[in-house]
Image 1 (cartoon, rainbow, N blue to C red):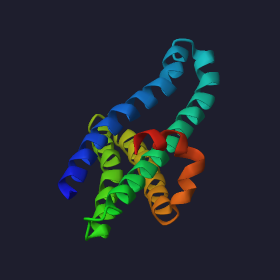
Image 2: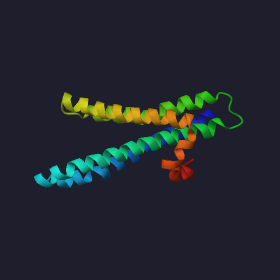
Image 3: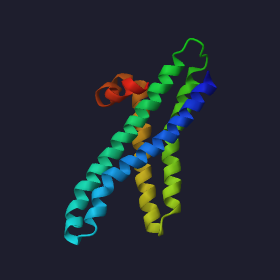
Image 4: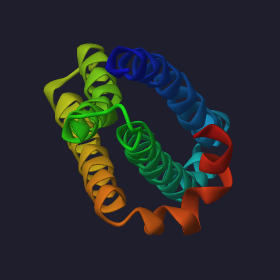
Length: 155
C-alpha cells in the first residue's frame, strides 16, 4: 500500500511543478508586455507582482492541503499500521517541489544578489507551505473554505 502511495505522490510532485510554472507564467505575462513601454511597465509592476505573489501563496497553500489530505486518506485505510509514515512522507513531498524549483532558479541566477532574492522568495513560499501543511494536518476542517472546491474532485 505504501509504495502505491509513494508512486502517486511522485507523479503529483511532477504535476505540481508543471502547474506552478503555468501559474507563475500566466500571472507575470503582463510584466513582459509592460516592459516594452517604460512608464506602463512601472505602473503595471506593483499590481502584477502583488497578484502573482498572492497566486503563488494560494497555490502553495493548495499544495499543502492536497498533501495533508492525501496523507489522511491513505493513512485512514484499515491495512495501514504506521500512520505517521504517511504524514512524514507527505511532508517531504510537500516541500520537494519548492526545493527543486529553488535549485533550478538559483543555478540560472546571474548575480549573487539575484541568487539571494530567489532564496528569500523560495524560503517565504516554503514557510507558507510548511505552515499550511501543519495546520491542515492538525485541523483538517480548515481546508474546507479555501480549497474544498478543488480537493473534492482530486482526493
